[in-house]
Image (cartoon, rainbow over all chains, first blue to last red; front, side):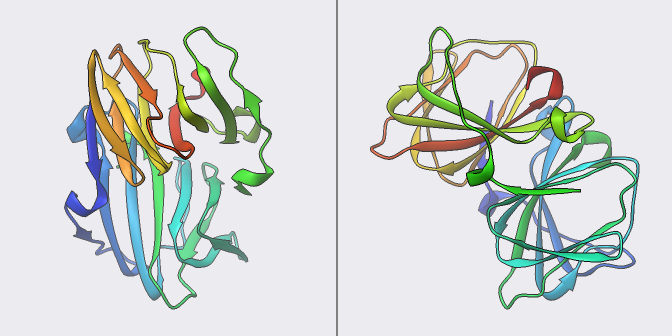
Length: 114
Length: 114
């Protein structure tokens, strides 16, 4: 059993095409012996965003803090703290922080995509 | 893509041996087309608990609200809002609400165990 908190997890800036002002933390992942799924947490600064892309794996998301929008294909849908989101495999998506405070969200993925 | 909030999700009381004062909601699950993992949310009342048991599937947990303890085998470990917990397969565990407000936590599992 592992018990941890976000403030103790290593922070990795995301250096990837299509990403602006985003960092990643992995409170539960492969290194902990998670057998199937990992919990990643992304923090996106005001005006920042994740890539507008699609991939074979799904995302299970939970918005921890802040607000913004998620692109469902080319349609922007508003999101805020407390929302649960399922991004299905091969669905084009992007998280954008349109607010004035950090947008922080959990992103569960198969561990191979951690 | 599905976007939802807990307050719109159906509530199921948990009628299972070893459980006291706990309800379940499934914001993201099989019914939504989640291909691998589901997000369940449990709310345990003050003095309530989940079963003290083990099983083949892991739990990925995040404490949304409240405080209490998680049994790691026969050892109680304190938990509170903001904690991330990995319960490994076959690890005996139990969530107990030792506080005075509801203990609410996310519990991600393989969809077969939803």
